Length: 205
Image (cartoon, rainbow, N blue to C red):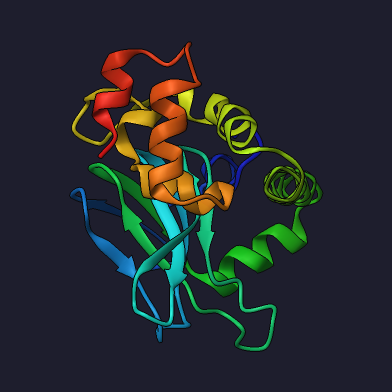
């Protein structure tokens, strides 16, 4: 985040300009936005973790990704209205909310920010490709083992409490991200993934 937008705004003395950047604190389980809402700010996670996803035809949550401090989410409005997503907090969070047009203009007009933004996009793209490869190519145990390192980070939430990211998610989140069922993930975690501690297994529900 050395070259992220907030640092740039601080350097330019613009961080408090109007309503272009606002700070929010939400408790665990707060629904930041959901379909059919399509106009959103661009959110930056300062602390805590957020689940993004959509809903199945039966109305059940389907997880696309789990986001950590430094990640961005929201609708950049680049796809002609093709946005149908929810965002829900997994812990107490602090977020920065950037006006979407202001965010895009700031990125467009600053080469360092543009380079940072492209790097972030490529990182997220590669992560999605890696998960798709695993879904299509690996067996159940390997799918789970491949994704677990992402969830080993320690996450400090907005209340100051620190937990492994793995403790904040559910078996269903892992199932959605690996193309498995919740029951299969539970079995793999219990039987096959030997390096997972008992306390971490119990933290999932």
